[in-house]
Image (tube, rainbow, N blue to C red; front, side, top):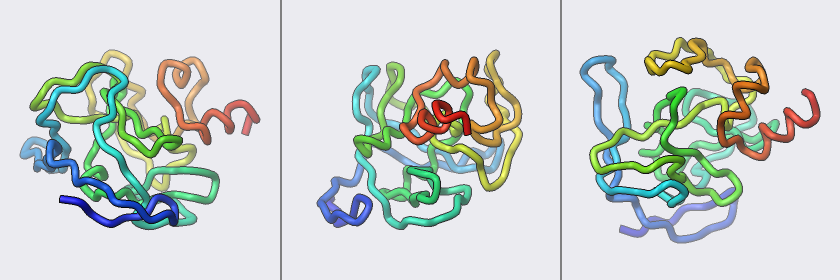
Length: 165
């Protein structure tokens, strides 16, 4: 099904990603996003756009710049949870969700929140269970460069690091 949406104010048609399904995890009570199609590293999982732009972050937004945070469209992409070992990345330049490793059907999608978030509205404890878990997720601002350089980072986060903000 095609849906009319806008990318930061530019109208375009976007195909609803039917290969993605929101599910409710009974173990932790959170929603997640399952992918029902395989993707190779670097492939586009879904296009996205800005349903709405905000000047301050909230727990559903993705940061585009210092004062621009977007609510994602399609809405189901807001269910991509955090992991310190992500399998996807929100590429702000191309407005696409991309695989950062091979993804098999039935896999839950995860991204590294500090890859797009400089200073989050609310911190939280990570429960990803990975060996490299950073435990408290607050935004890229609070992480050493040695950790951040292990991840794909949005242009805004890269610029903040380069400017030493």
